[in-house]
Image (cartoon, rainbow, N blue to C red; front, top):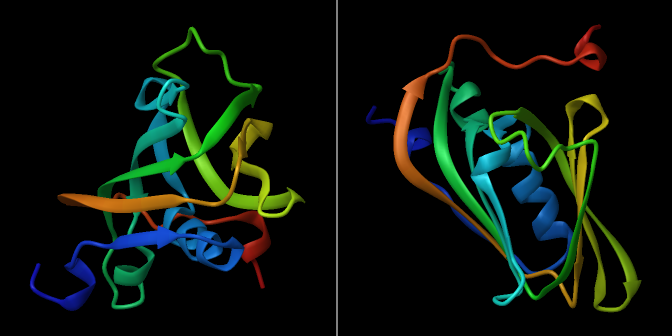
Length: 149
């Protein structure tokens, strides 16, 4: 794959606008519960996901890429509708948002399909997303009910 869309992404988020860009690139990423880790001693939350390459889709490609995402300066991690013991549960990431509580601190929410969510309390937004290399053809382009005309 020699087109520019095949180039690996490296994104850093230091504010809500940056985080919205990371969220857009990770929309419809899929991962398993075991692909996430809360590391309280390091104050880090990390995950690996298979993201749909939305940039490549604009050029007519349907593909997924392995990507890593981590958040630093995390003081707490909570989950809703995710069974921590079900490591093979597949999650579909819909969005990543930030709600400021006491500037620059706040809560980052990873929203998944079926009402699942992870909320990270952070001192400030400090996140990094990086493509890890593998690229493969996707079976289909993800769609949403609100995409209909």
